[in-house]
Length: 269
Picture 1: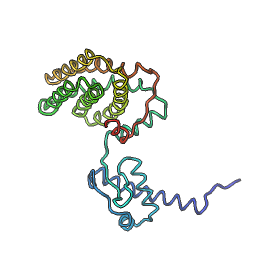
Picture 2: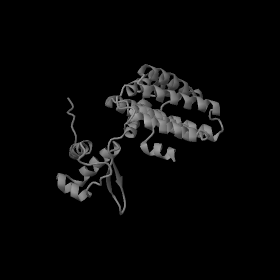
Picture 3: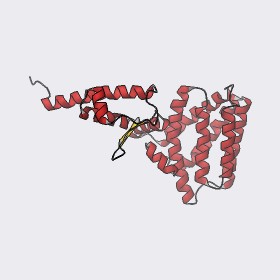
Picture 4: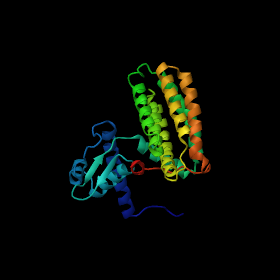
């Protein structure tokens, strides 16, 4: 019988990996619980090595783990260091996008999920007792911005996405905010990409269709303000289904592509 085992070097690497995971767990806990806040700069690596009592190899591996998770970004050079990033929808959307991309999930599948979930958020938002003070003024502001930029297809679409993001963010259910918000971020990244390309090619939907979309946004806002959850849900369901046809019409079989927070930021520029 052959005895399986690992050599001294492999054991050393395994030990370093386990130590790195312990350090990463502690730093992750401090970030999640707010002991380290967004924008904080971690102490120098030599300070962290002494603080945790680990090797430089283990510390750097721990930082790589957190960087992959989007919880820190490591800067090199004279102004080097690790900057803390609080958990964000964009990072969650990226990881979810990687999962869906690895399973070759079509974009239409994501669209179908949002056709069910987005209207639920609109209904929840309409039931919030404080919607007049929190959500409705912001939605009115976004609708005004859409009207001002109705001639710029890419910008019009971007603001429209912010409208839907705001409804999800203020629906009042934290789980829906996290889950649906991540899905919406993933969808919006593809939608904004389509809008930029179609506008550049002169193929963006005509002005009358933009006015229809803006009109529906106004009706959804009115329904939320009136507390009419059923009407808000129905309007959102029809609107989401209608607007998705533009993105999916070019290639119904197109697959989901994970968009990193950096890629999303670049596409907004």
